[in-house]
Image 1: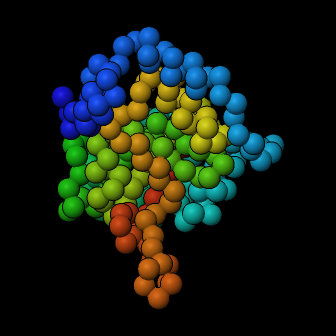
Image 2: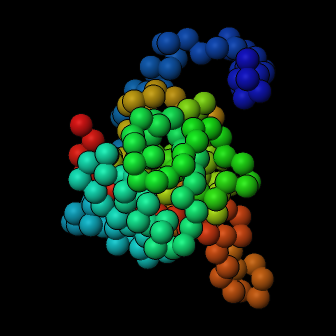
Length: 218
């Protein structure tokens, strides 16, 4: 068992329950969530893709759009060259199959180290209301790739841009059933204003976040 599972099993034991929830118990929780009325929300009479771009730019991210996944390497190369950044990166396994070499980018599929200049990831979904990327941790989607390099490039599918946080969580429940070990929300480059109330980028993570929206992934 993982440390998380061990802790939860101990809590359940103190409650007089079996260490592992039965399927009936899980279904009861799912039914409760489905029946729960949503909280009041602001009007969302905007196009999700346009809203995501607007909000992401407002958070100091940059945004590009390509028609298909095989156009991503060229788009990444243009971004790196325009910012005088190295054509070297680490990426998630789901992006390993596209032709990075043709765009002149040296890409390794592994967890990131603090010496890696660029990390390229996918995104579980993107949230239009706030311009936020939602990523889920797993063996093939290590969080280090978005956290350690100074430049984070995220590939987001247009069809996975949802309206709000509520839709993002519901999508995760529908597709995974239970949350992974970590769920990360990325809203632009890392920043802090702890020192003299001056906003500083890159204090606790990447200096740059560049999002490439892919219109078609088939």
